[in-house]
Image (cartoon, rainbow, N blue to C red; front, side, top):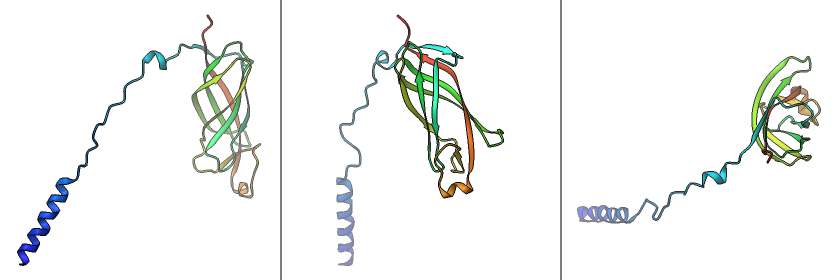
Length: 158
């Protein structure tokens, strides 16, 4: 009797295990988008004149994971992206860090857009000196920035 109930349990387990399907049916691969639809032609302007693009309003509070700033396109052409270098300084103007970024942007001629990038301060020990501060800021270090635009990606002139 003991062997009959044990074999019944083994048989029932085998039947239920065989009935379970672990693969998904009717899966389809994603169709690649047409290459011409995703790529747009752009001209590059390396080392642009300082008056072509203004970068203002930088902010990074103490506990923020993002750095934000405003970019104004002063040219007559639409801006599709920009490459820039941010240099971070302590209060004695000693360099703390430097980072280069290449960011896509859609800024029409004569307009301003807010941009944001991931923060360089992964441990939340620094805050921008002009940001609002909390009581925790006494334990943190203020810093200043310098943003230099290296390259502009603009819509080609026709």
